Image 1 (cartoon, helix red, strand yellow):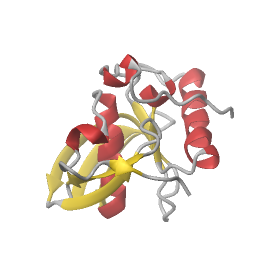
Image 2 (cartoon, helix red, strand yellow):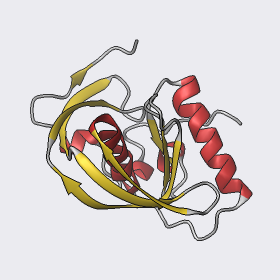
Image 3 (cartoon, helix red, strand yellow):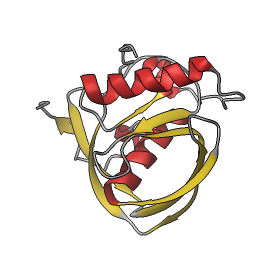
Image 4 (cartoon, one colour):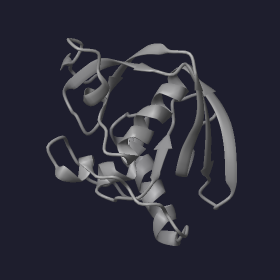
Length: 158
């Protein structure tokens, strides 16, 4: 695994729509492994989309530190949502800022895993928030676009 450079706010690639992954090649597997290392092990994040490391592909990784561990999502699709929750968010691509966003309390998502196997899962709370945040990145949307007015402010990283 290798650390990747994180693209930050202002770079036009973050506003582009990511492309579907047609085949899960060794390069895609390495990308996901590198993203996980970059996200968590170097930056203490809980999610990272491929576009955040400059790759316009529909993939992201999440690891909120629960029993699910690291989850790889390739070509994800959120198929249903339920309820609403107010979430405090930050983003590795928007360093030094945090804000609050309204997200679904529960979601159902379909995707491919790192081996190309289809899977579906229900998520709620923090996991649903994280998946929705990373899913937005695939369509060029940052959390600051959806932030509740007046909630985005400077924050210090721990």
